[in-house]
Length: 343
Image 1 (cartoon, rainbow, N blue to C red):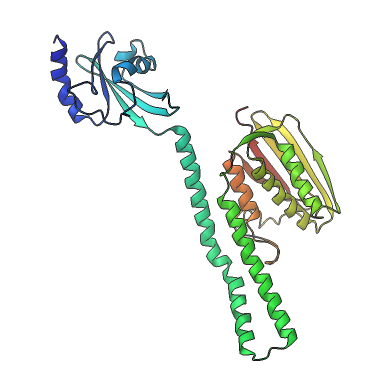
Image 2 (cartoon, rainbow, N blue to C red; image 1 turned 45 degrees about the horizontal axis):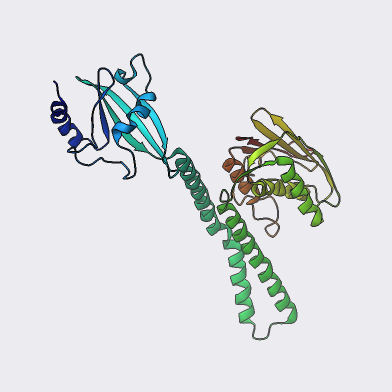
């Protein structure tokens, strides 16, 4: 077949049936036709500000591989930056034909947006799981509140002792519900803040400073072995929250008195921080449950059971993990592992 009109007549029904932009290539790699050219109808998936397919052909052909790339059936990924800064991501499908090859261009999501969407989906799923747990978790304080209110209402003139006891009960249970609400808000906001490069030991020192100001480390010997090379890309406030929770848990496990050792170590593309205390350790039967939302070994008025769950979520958001490394008698040891990320 010769002549552009002949090719146009052949390709037109193909363009009409295809939902994607297409380039027709000859045996020598020349562009025989493009679906967005005059007379071929609309160009599905194309941006009004995008360059014509013929002008983009050189970019696409450069991405193909093989002895004769434009005749080698394959798939390839394309990313093109627009003058506006928009990133256009496409998947290329090349198939052999009687005249040479057909190159189909299919739009695909920006991988950065897709990753953010995946993280958001995972975060919402985790939050949904935790919110479902709230229905059960707040039942006890609400039941207690309901009972004491009924008792006070039944007494036309409650004694001062009964009134004081009732108000104290109300205050404790309201505080517990507020604590759960506050921690859930923190959990839902994980990942919302911008990320910068920082030294992980700065986050550790900030967490220790906060607890010293609160007097929680007054009788605890804190030993910290930093690593000046341990820097990562992330949110220092969120990473500080990990160590705040770990330090608080350790202090309470040791009843406010003992030793707390923190060791930072660079390990290739990863940073490892080991937090060890001299408390009683974690009972073997509880080790598998301590990261569950709302699970706590403390009295109801002392903890919400969300601290380690939030630590886990923050570590996952940063591409890392947190594990109980040792729970033997004589102390618990937690390992926080986070990637360095791009410098």
